[in-house]
Amino acid sequence: MPLVRLGSLPRPATLDTAQQMVRHDEPHDDDSLSLSLLPAPADAPPHQCPPSPAPHSWSDSPPAAKEPIRYSLFELFVLITLTAVMLASIRLVGVAAFAGLAGIVGFLMLVIISIVKPTRGIVHVAWWVIMVVYLTSAAAAILNKDL
Image 1 (cartoon, rainbow, N blue to C red):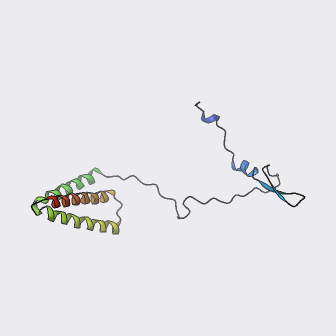
Image 2 (image 1 turned 60 degrees about the horizontal axis):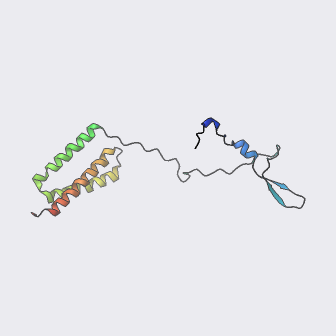
Image 3 (image 1 turned 180 degrees about the vertical axis):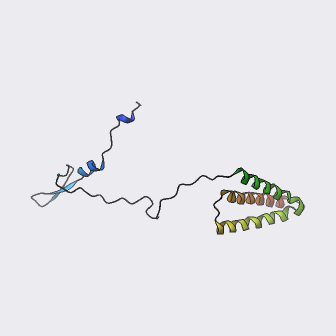
């Protein structure tokens, strides 16, 4: 396939050229209408195309571009430290009680996140960490034979 330079491509027709090439009605002597693709006469008003609906006409504003989620190193350090302390508390309360507490904390975080709607992404990551800890500790409590 030969390479084509961008400058050598034909330019698309402009709106003025397209409006001049619009079909128009010409009455004939036998009272029938004929559609013609000939250019419109110079004295004819330009054809007005109906406006096309906006892609998001159902909303008041276009959708905002998603901003990438950013975490600071400090936020991640605090999250990992709190997770380690939380996992260390398994030794104090036992696996079954810890799984129950983690489930309650996860549910309360879900309610708080739903009400407050925080803008920081680390809050959602913290909730997912709580859910992973809850599911793994619940599985460990189920598989533990010394209940």
